[in-house]
Length: 154
Image (cartoon, rainbow, N blue to C red; front, top):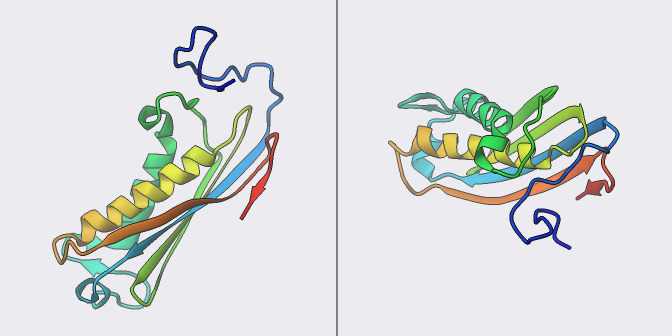
């Protein structure tokens, strides 16, 4: 049986009311490949684009996306996040974005971690598109999740 369908095969949220609250943590990662013109704007810890600081804006946007996941993915439960942390770094022409999210609740936060890295990756694109549109967002994936029925580790 598919978990997001009711007995009449209509979309439905999963009932988590009987689950015991536990500490739930998830980590996701995305890669953003930049053209040389954007990489040239890197000053050692930040890309300073024409719209402002790229990584700082990506952290804010990604955090907002993680907190608003249930507004984007309609069958997700709204969750109060205890923590949302980002690690964003440039290695060569590739920005690696990692987002770790945690809560104490009845359902996991993997969708929040994924929404966080997607939001941050889209912010990198938006902040740099004035320099070049040759930006690739790729390899977005769940790295780990703990605290539910099944733990996942890459």
